[in-house]
Every structure is written in C-alpha cells, then in structure tokens.
Length: 295
Length: 319
Picture (cartoon, rainbow over the protein chains, first blue to last red):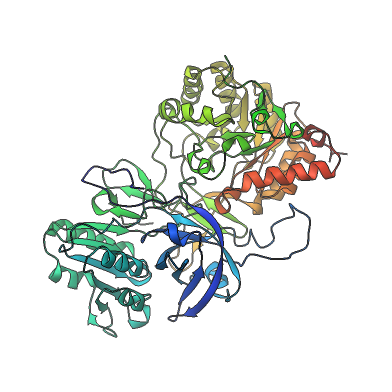
C-alpha cells in the first residue's frame, strides 16, 4: 500500500501490516569488534517487508516449556523490558528469511548476541515506511550513502533498486575498516561499493560526503542511513545540488508502532514532531530536521 | 441517546463475569488501556478489536495542540523505562472531530484524559467534551500528575489545595464521570485522594509515573533531553500496589489501579488491594496484545478462584 503523500511530490514509500512472529535463529556471527549478523527464518514477516522497514526484536529467546500457571509473571519478558528496533539488512521474501545487523551497545544487545541457531526470537514487524519504490526511472543515478550501523538497511535497498532496473552505487563510511557493518551484504546485493574511512584503513580516507560531493549531479536520487551528523551533511549537500534525498533515521524508541511518541523527529517546518516508527524511519530530506538537539 | 446499550462486551460475547461499573463508567471488563500508551486507539485496532478493552484512556488531551518535548524522550531502565514525551497531542478539537467519531464505533468505553497549563484550560477542555454526542465519552480522567511538563501536571498533582481546586473546576465544567489520575511523587497519596474526593471526583486512578532519571556516562549528560522523566513498567508495580492499597482504604470512591501491570495475576493483585479496574500501559509497548492477554488471564484466575464476578475480587485481599 502506498503511504499518503506529503507536500513535495509523489510519495513512493511503502507501509505493511505488522504481525508478530516467533522467528527461528538460522545463524548468528560476529562481523566486527562490536557488531553481529543475525539470520532469521520469518516466513510470516519476510514476504510483507520492504527495504527500509524495521523489526522490533525481543533480545531474549522465547521460553519454551517453562512451568507455571497461565498468567504467571513473564520472567523472560520484563528484563530487559523493551525489544530492540533493528532495520532489515537482507531480505528473502520467497525463502521466508531475513537478516539484521546490529551493534552490541548495552546489556540488551549483548543478550541478543548470545542467541543461538535453533532458538526462537519474538519479532514484531514489518514496521514503518520503506525507502521509495525504486521503479520507473532506470537511468536516474541512485546513490546509497551509509555510515556505520546505518549501512545494513542499504543491502536490501540495493537489491530492490536492482530489481527495479536501477544501477545503485554505494558510498559506505566508518571510522575504520572494522566499522563497515554490512558493507559486504550491500556489495552482494548488487551495488558497487566505495568504502570511505576516517582513518584510511579501507577505501578512500575521509567522509562519505566528501566523495558524494564529487559524484552528485542535479536530479540524482540519494538514499541514506547513518548517524545524525552524516545525515545532516547529506541533507545539506543534496539540497545544494538539487538532488532528491531520502533519509533513514535512528531513534531511541519504545513501542515501534506509533503509540508511545518516544521516537520524535523534528519537522523541518517547525510544526512539531513526527514519529520515526510510523512516519519514518525513511523521511524525505526536506521534511525533517535530522539532528538530535544538543543536550 | 446513548451510543451503547449496556456494556460493549455484551455484543462481542465477553463473559458477564468480567463486567464492571467504575464511577459510572460501564465496562465490559476491568482491563483498560492507560493514557499515553494507546494513542487514540487506531494503531492497536490494527491488531485486535478495541471492544476487547474495558475502556480506552486516550492520550492526554489539551485545549490547543501541544508540541511535546524534544528527543531523546525515552530510556530503558531495569524492568522499566523512563519517558518525557511532554504530553504531545493534537488538541481537543482534533479529538472531537477526527478521533472520537471513529472511536465510538469500536465498541469500547472512551475515557478522555485531559491536561492543561491552568485551571481554566483544564475546565475548558472538560467543557468542550460536552460538545460530543451523548454517550460518546464515557468519562474524564483528569491528569494532574504528568512529571514532564513545566506547567500543569505536578504543579497541581503535588499540591493538595491546587489538586482540589482543579478538580472542583472540572467538576463544575462537566457532568461526565470524573476520575482524577494521581501522582506517586507525593508523601501521602491518600491525602490527595481524599482531597479530590471532597472536591467532587467520582473516582481516582493511580499511579502516574515516578519521577526519575538516567545519565549517559560516556557523554556525561542526562539521557533524556528533558533531563528527568517518568518511570513506568514492572519496576513500579510494588510501589503502585502499595499506593492503591492506601488509597482504597481511605476513600469511598472507586479506585483504578495502574503501574507495571503486565499479566492477569498482576491485575488480580490490584483488584485484591481494592482497585475496581486496572490500566495496562507500558506492557503494550513490548506486546501490543498485552491488554487482551491480561484480560484473558484475569478471567481464568477469577474462574479458578470460583468467583462469580470480578467485583467479588475487589478489596478481597484486605484484612
């Protein structure tokens, strides 16, 4: 289903009905010093999903065969309290599987990293709005610009763009080579990757926006995901060059489906806040102020 | 004309075992969705029929739209979370014209949580609810306990005289059943319950969130942009239960229990302490189906206890 279009032209983002599913862990491996890849069999959710959407992932496996009366306190459930919102990295709708790539940032994600093949993790999804449908303008350049843990959703995005006849080019940045989380998946999904690292340990030394500035032409399209400062730089560059940009943001979040209002993203017109979970996480660059306010 | 004849559950086959009347709010069951945890119902209605709820307390609603606080607005804590949303809401006109007409068709009792910066604003919102069709709004929940706004909220909820004054003003402005949602951030919550009872409240609901904070040690700054926020979730449950116990023992109006309820047995504890109904809040964030599960588990517990009605459980844990 197409999302309602805001001012500024057609909105090609997609929304899905969300469901819950106890997904089977097929594989998990450590991809870098602090990040992991998790492959899940999710035959209900995978066929509903579009690139750019995310999942709420419970960090503890579903308990099976626990004794106790119905209605007893859900011991696995409230500690940690909340699931973790993770973007879909690779997506196989026909095969009913998908993967997520995430950084171990605290106790919850450390627990998630201990999930083993054969265990089941409760998912809610697919949540939020996707990247815009890539079909239509095969010759129009599409730049996928990712930073750090913002790289993974660009993998299925690259595959979707290829399937739509586009020839996406990826610019993927991190402090160093070890931080290029999901870059291999982006390349495997059919987008030529130019790595850019601040320390020069992989690809070009510098920032992704340095390289994007050289490549970008008026009328190009950019899909970007990464830290707020990077997204803000992509936003400025695209506005200056007359390129169309779609930004996938990350926010601290509680529910993921629109009721808690925790994941506020400031509207660029000063008219209050949007929700990253249902009004995004992919936004038209002109609609939002992506920088988190200074504390 | 009333929109619904009898409890909504009567039409969906829910057992009369669960039906309750709380301060004049007739409910198919005693499990409600808490304000701020269910929006205006549309998101949850995508997952299950809202008629499964005893009542839905809508997001805190003000006279004019409120922007809310900048982010970050939420932070997880041990078995709980902090929020500092700041009562972002589209205002009472939006509720009356856009959300309420849809909500009344969902077959659940609609309780409107109202907020204001001044006594006059609170009263004006309550008065505007009189423009709704008869029966569309089942009750008003007066929110004097939000810890995340500078004006309104705790300014009224932590001062006995102000709590009574705003309750009396809203009582004057509406004939709908009036609940007052109390703050736990006071020394003697029972004194506040008694004060609002004297000022005309038909019932009280408690607890709102406990004022708390977290600090990001790497950034050496508070995590929430608002610096402090309200603690909710299972971590709060023992405090909430104790406060419900104290209030139920000291007022003669109905009490609605709130605070960390995630299972049917949690709900049963609150009923036994003296609550006539409960609200499920933060549990919705980790499981959108939580209110339905709590209702079903509570029903199973009542049957296992051999009780003929949920009303039998209310206060049954008191010596």
